[in-house]
Length: 243
Image 1 (cartoon, one colour):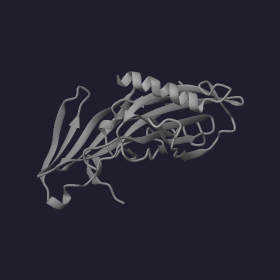
Image 2 (cartoon, rainbow, N blue to C red):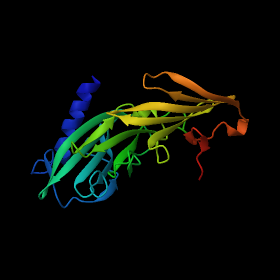
Image 3 (spheres, helix red, strand yellow):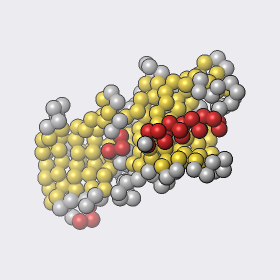
């Protein structure tokens, strides 16, 4: 049922946004901006375009790629459409399309930056509502300069509060629960693969993870209650993030 609803949603959206030159294939080159638009669609009370974000100045190979995020509601469900374009002479050509259901109450809040240290900008946006407000859940998309496409990192929502970690050349995440965990991971194909973690509760435990997924305990220390919510930038040696 949800699939049928989503298909109807896409058809509806295409009808209300498609220009005469067929948007699904190309855009005029004049659409070269970074913008956020909030729209209330009154043409159908069961469908509402909540937010549109467009960037063609920073994503991927700057000036040669464009991304369009569309968040909209169909009945009681919200969806996000991700469209990624490559530039050809005088036109934008659609390269990737991704569609996701989204239950996040806040806006997309896109973050365009380099998450894998290849000198090409990638993107994250808020994509789900976390059980704890301190955990910001985002989807991560990495620009693949070889294929000239945007790759969805399929398990990125499992790593809240993601940051690119320059010191270890990886991505780290900070999970808030009864205590806290800092998790270190590297991008492998379309996934994040953990290689180390630090967990704080009544004790601080530091683990390293081998290629087979086996955890090795590096250290276990008692910690003070005020140190439970510390985020780490390195695990060997143990090093805290500093403002």
